[in-house]
Every structure is written in structure tokens, then in C-alpha cells.
Image (tube, one colour):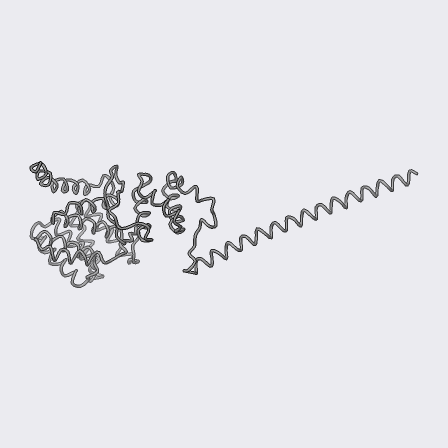
Length: 334
């Protein structure tokens, strides 16, 4: 009987082990099945991304893959650090759904985040046709202003890869000009022109040195050189803009408008080129008495220049002076 009991216990233990192994096998199969489903889901997502990236008819929309992020976008645009905000802005802009475009619009026209980031969002909305050219009420440097949009793409990095040696000497030239060491700046310009005589940037910087250092004679000499640069390099935007402002100062509004139109044909600009263009538009608008247009150009400059930039204060004073006759005219008509 004892032998039979032991056999029965052994049999039961074996059954339990078999049951346990069977359960493990089922669990293993279930895990394998779940893993397979996850792999298929990942593959489908990858296929969707692949198809979207290479198919213009089916644009890539990140929020379709990560719908849980959609509700977080407004808060992330408000509270992320600058780098995080740029990433979220890029994802939201590429989504292009009506709901996401409206979220971007609310952010761009708010007073939250940096003016640079909101201007990027506003330009993205304009390029996608979600908003018109304006004027739009835009917050910058503590005030609300009216700005107009155009199809400009503004970049911090050079649009063309410069020669390393020329880039280095140009940087030294500009640094010397900034501190008022015009003689040393000319030395650097001459070094560039010795190796690259047709360098339009070096020729232009040399002309700016003459204007700053050599009085009226230097200005005349510089304007002659700038006209030559424009003839040889009509795509050199800085010389075109200087000539446009000069024409406006001489009362030749038609020539100023022609040159300004030529400069604004370009849609991709370095931030320094965009700054020069908005500054020229501001000055020409003031000279023409177009106060509202000048205010719009100044608003755009406020998004590119820092609040402590001395040029900004100078332009604000110029605008205030230009407004005074209008104020007096209004008072006289009351």
C-alpha cells in the first residue's frame, strides 16, 4: 500500500509539472504572439513613414503615428526650452492637418515663446496657405505690432559653402569694423581681394569702410564701387539695397522701387540679408511718407535684432520724427 501511495504521489507531481510546463508553453506562445503583433505594428508604421516620405500624394503626418502627442502640443509650445520648442514646431508644421495648423496659428499670434519661433510658425502657416499675408498683429520686444508676410525663407547658416580662408578673413573684417578699427579691416579686405579679386562681399565691405572712415570723399568713392558691384553681380543684395536707398534719398522713387523689387525677388536669404532688406524697406518707406509700411518693416526688424541693438532705437526715433507732422495735422483738423 505504501508503494502504491508513493506511486500515486509521484504521478500527481508529474501531472503538476506537466500542467506547469503546459501553462508556460501557452504563456510563451502568447508572448510570441504579442511580440509578433508588435513587430507587425512597427513594420506597418515604418511602411507608412516610408510611403509618406517618398509619396507626395500622401504627406507624412507624425500625429497619425503618435496621436497622444496632439493634445500636448499647445502646452509643449508654451513650456519647452528653445530647442524643444523648435522640435515640436517642426513636428506640428509637418503634420499640416487643419486642427494642427489652427494650434500653430494660436501660438504664432500669441505672446508666448520667443518672437523668432513664433515668426517661423507664422511664415510656415503663410507658406501652407492657412493664413494670408496680413497685416497680422504680432508680439515682439514687449509690444504688439502689425506685420506683413512674404514668402521669405530666412537662414542662420550660409546658403552657399564659403571658402574657409575667405570666411575667416571676412569675419575678422567685420569684427574690426564693429570696433571702429577701419584700417585693420581694410588690411583684411585687401588680403581677400589679392586672392579673389572678384569677391563681391570683400569689395562691398571695403566700400563700407571708405564710407565710415573717409568722409564725403570716401562716400563718393564707395558709391562708385557699389555701382560697379551691382553691374557685375546683380544678385549681390547688399549693393542693390544701398543703391535703392540712395535713389530714394535723391528723390528718384521710381528707381528706388525698381531696385527694391529686384532685391525682393530672392526667397531664400541669410539673416544678415533679410535684416538689410527690411532696413532698406523701412528707410525707403519713411522717405516716401508711407508710415504704416515703415512700421511693418520695423516690426520685422524687431524679430531679427535684439532689444538692445542700437540700430533699433535709432529706427524708432526716426519713425517718431516722421510721425510728428501727421500728429500736428490731426491736431489742426480737430
